Length: 305
Image 1 (cartoon, one colour):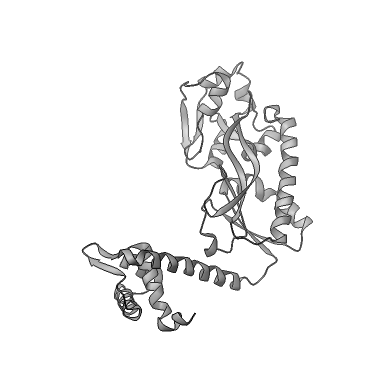
Image 2: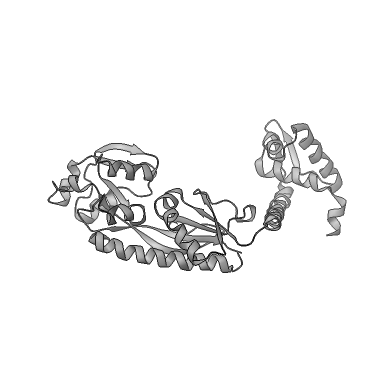
């Protein structure tokens, strides 16, 4: 630690930011100071270290080869410092912070939060509805729920539920259908951000390559579900997004099978996260809720059985 006494911390922050962002302007914006201040900090730090870290070019400051490893270690060090500050600022360890994909939060989780509170009144939930995976050392998130293939660098993933999809529509729209091919004549409600396409289901029923006629395309799956409920078309949907509507008869799944997309719902935690009782309690509770809900769904919509 003695080496740190020879160099100002603000200077190291400036050097790390410039090296990572490759821009004096971007570093100044992140640090909340002027470009001139960042430039001066970099110069002072190079003098204190006794070596040049950046080459001055027409494109700005470019790290010299010998500085690449130095900058990488600085970035790692500041990530740890940021994580320590976030940990120190936690004022109440009884609050569980969960980052959840917005569609899962709105269509499945939010309605069940009262049940969790009833079982665990000592734990308060803070829900952050987003699908980004922020650097684990720079956030106070305890647990994430994501949809994907289970591989996120820097994180551990635990499967909750394999994602399966089937076409859904209103009972009135389904009444005119006799075989899977009839669905091709109906307008489709398309999720423009979906990680799968209609081909995943069409192939399973022998209609691979069939043309899909899109009526509406949305950038949010929740809007697609609302459009399907309103009778605007057929949606290729997965279990959790439409479970409530299927169980209450607003939508039906006229034809199976429900097919795997290759994706799934996962618990995602930092690779270095320590075991937490509140996280484990939530995970066990949510798994039971998912299992119970899928049993009810299989009775209401046998294609998901």
